[in-house]
Image (cartoon, rainbow, N blue to C red):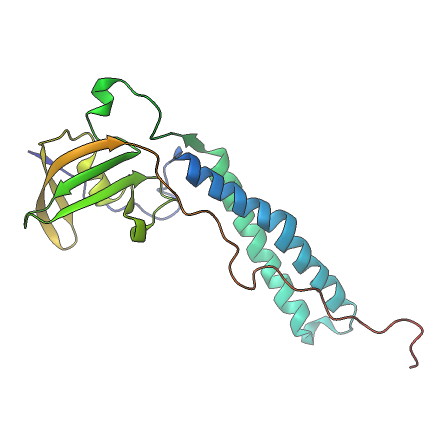
Length: 203
């Protein structure tokens, strides 16, 4: 009986150097980067430029908010680019040797039973693709590590903050994993700034 890793990944500094990711996950990162770079950032820049033309910047709420949002966008763009550059693309649906197909590796969809004989199905994905609503778990999560390299019929030990529990691997399959595509959050793209008076307007 094997034991799963219990150590929690630390933020940032402990992020794996290689960013294992599925095609859908990589497409989502690229879509967000493209949206921020070509749509939201230019829109916010336009608002900042307009607000700066209205006088005292120190008490200009539109200007202060816009500058703060630009810093947030730039930080997110740098993060996304690092994740994209470090990406190691793995297609779960791609053919693989029989020996590899019979064990749990990145991209596997695993059907397992817990100690109470309750059955569960999870797909093992990259840390940028975690979606618990879709049962997509990270390969560096306690559950992902516990299942890693197991074969059908194997029993593994999951050690989590709530205690240790035994899992039985029932089925392993490799198939396309549907990742939720990127969707701009409501209000993310700034609306055009108010029309300021023309130069011919009376003063």
